[in-house]
Image (cartoon, rainbow, N blue to C red; front, side, top):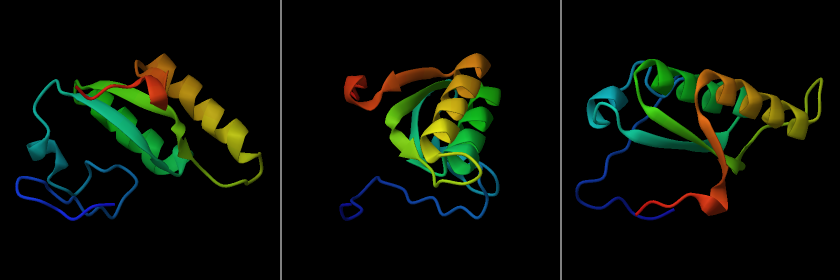
Length: 102
């Protein structure tokens, strides 16, 4: 993590969907490509990616850069199911090392 510099924004969220109850929708230009990664694949990652797709954004899920905890099923199986679901919903699922930000 790095210090926040001029022009960067911090979005604090209270729900799984990072768009819900935050100013994120105002910060992200319409139709922007969003790369989604993070913890709790089946909650925050899934909810935010689906919300972004509904808002018309191109969504790239960074495979290998999202995770969860073992539950009724092993974490790896849960993460894989989320990748399949999001791909079927229209997200591109790509290995994180292949994603460029240039």
